[in-house]
Image (tube, rainbow, N blue to C red; front, side, top):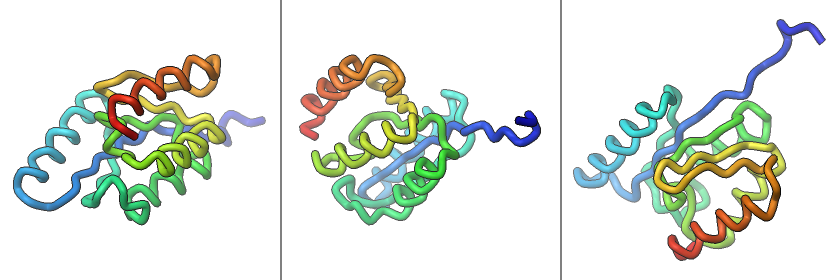
Length: 132
């Protein structure tokens, strides 16, 4: 294959806040700042509840993951992506199938190419802390 045709999956940040009030906007700006400090320039943003599965930004993120355009997602904490166990499982399955790594700035990185039990043990500890 010609190296000119190789498309490298990029790293994308994801931030979410439940409302658009001033405190939530401050939280969102802090998330963006931390993700940019981690070297991520492209960030998808949602103003919606974590239990809302119909978030526009999350839909865009998942579409890009399924197309193989994202190699790594950076979020501050797991609860920025989801709080319900159903959505957690759906996201994990999607990330695993696409071999997308997830970096939680407050909790560590999940790489599904490593030994599966290690990733699931790590995620299980996050779920227990987040009541996911």
